[in-house]
Amino acid sequence: MEQHPAAIYKDHLKPFLVSKLEEFIILGYKDVDLEELWSYLEKKKWKKKREYSIHELATDILSVKIGEFMNYATVQSFKTSAILGSEDGKNMLDELLK
Image (cartoon, rainbow, N blue to C red; front, top):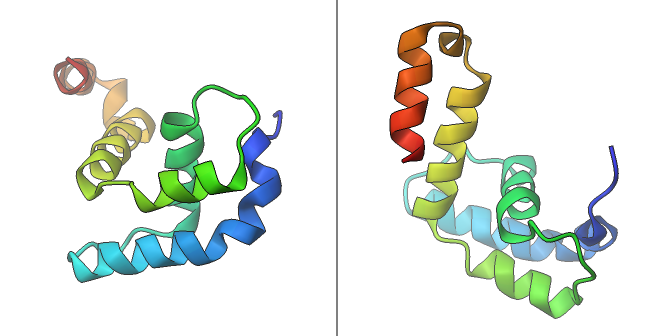
């Protein structure tokens, strides 16, 4: 799989990622990890695979809202869940994606 252009800055952006995870913990979301947050950023915030400046990436990280992230995580969970093998699971996902 091709590496996302932002990946070259990942180590430099760790303090921002950790800061955002600490904010999530304060808000009561203790189970989010750095890799899940990074995946969200790559797949949602940085969908367009273009060159990003490090300050753009840092700003995007700090602007993530817990609701946006949790919506993404919920959809990902449904996509990877065994429940999708059933018709009910597919219908639930369709409803969620409307």
